[in-house]
Length: 130
Image 1 (tube, rainbow, N blue to C red):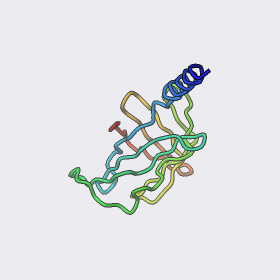
Image 2 (spheres, rainbow, N blue to C red; image 1 turned 135 degrees about the horizontal axis):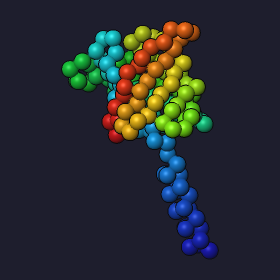
Image 3 (cartoon, one colour; image 1 turned 45 degrees about the vertical axis):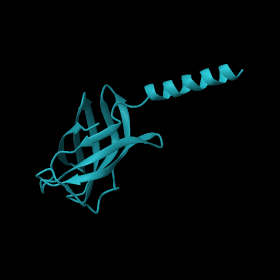
Image 4 (tube, one colour; image 1 turned 30 degrees about the vertical axis):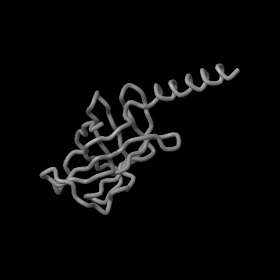
């Protein structure tokens, strides 16, 4: 019985690792209007996908302190299949605005776009850090 329980536990752990969404990980954003960029840790939250600002950098690539460290940047994102994500929001700290957003994953690149009403913005392409 103990062997059965151990085997069953191993199967569940292996299955849950295999079910991790390919978007999960740390992503480097494009430079904002001030030349700054950040590292966003993307993970599961509730039934959706969220991302939190973990670290900020200036245009020269030096780490800087930011009042937005720890801020939720992505929330409510849903995997639509085929590398497409939608129905979520992305907060842009440099503009202090929240956009209804879409993401498109292609390997280690993440294309970001978002709209407020009819005004849309290209959020650039983020690259995977890890």
